[in-house]
Length: 321
Image (cartoon, rainbow, N blue to C red; front, side, top):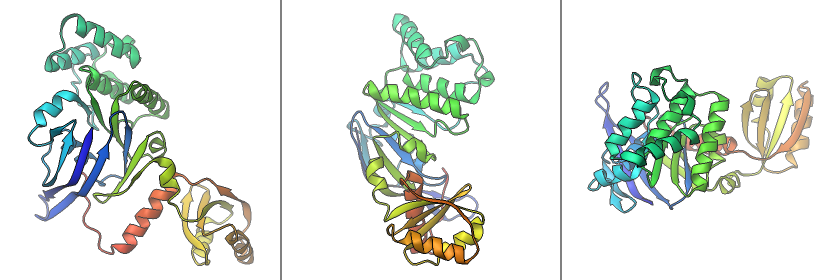
């Protein structure tokens, strides 16, 4: 469905006049029917990548095809075959749900009985049927996201590009949205979704971890988690700050990552645990609990980002495009 080789995009900063790189030497291959997650923080290059794949933004270098169409020469053909949902609500706030969907149907040439049937199917699918007379600006954030997805689906696209579709919505709406994506995936749709949330990455067939414009890792969630060296110990103590400082000095401790009232300590092996317990006790720190924990995407991503930063003492300027 998608083949990307050496794709790059640079921008000239209007503030400093410097040329900054948003996406660097990106190579990626996505098969039909995949639910692919593009994961990373703001400024990682996710939006720029999706806009290039959608034929909206021309690359500075490299090449890519979407369903056989070149993203530059075949940009118009690509737009007919994909549904694109931007980060921000991209429909009309003054129009009702019905009016927005009818407008999108006009754009894509969906008419007559097919239009009526398609709109009804999608409103039922996204549970928006009872809100069809409500104006776009009067919808909640979650309902606006659902309306954006509905609009992207009216012409039965072969590919869906969703740019951080759940950012800024409540947990219930986020879960409902991902339930909808799971159904689309089960129906055979190819979906690429960008997200800053690592728990959402767990729902994807494959995940690409992006940072500073580069694709650092691309594999299945389970394979990515296996890349983490050693094991993870979940540690609860009465003094987080002092414990974190002391732990980093212990031989065999690879990384320490705070999560609320827990320190996730990545260690070489289980033999490091008694050393941790002894040294923290000697420092007068009380351990509430310490136990092995399964690695999560968060630990892997943070670990590799820290290694990247350590190896690039002057990282290139990040761009949020």
